[in-house]
Length: 154
Image 1 (cartoon, helix red, strand yellow):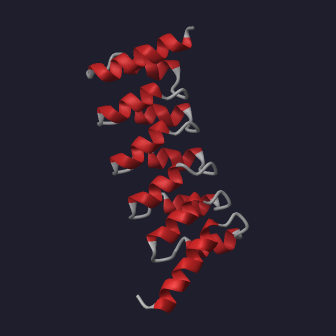
Image 2 (tube, rainbow, N blue to C red):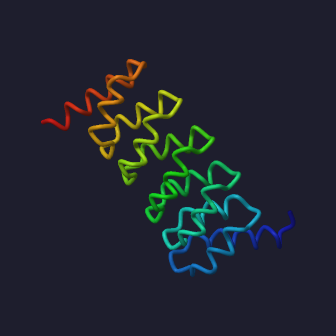
Image 3 (cartoon, helix red, strand yellow):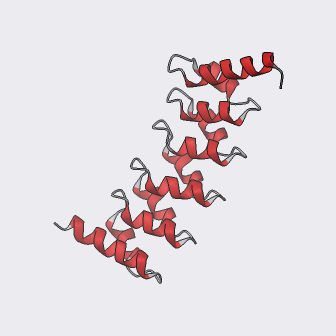
């Protein structure tokens, strides 16, 4: 990469991070080859739902994680991220405080017990799902679900 390309990449990254960047500019930046630019777009709260939906399927895990922590991410996108192929993405979704009970119910069925523990720990997991998790074959999962149920009864 020459210096001119590097400056251009830095400008794109800066633009993707700005809260004043327009939705149209963010849509264009979301198609950039540089994953760091795409990640910055995924973190920007002004990014459109359509763009976040595309970025939720990005080949770079760090971009998908950024989508999962964006406060503008919709429930439909969270449902997509809850079944992501990367455990890191599903784990971040399970720990995020703005995820719906519907998404937590999906994560409660995850094949990875660590993600089920996070689902059991999350305050947005509903009572029905916690009761199911309290019967999980993994003791750590069932214990966390029982603790969460007890905390809610206080």
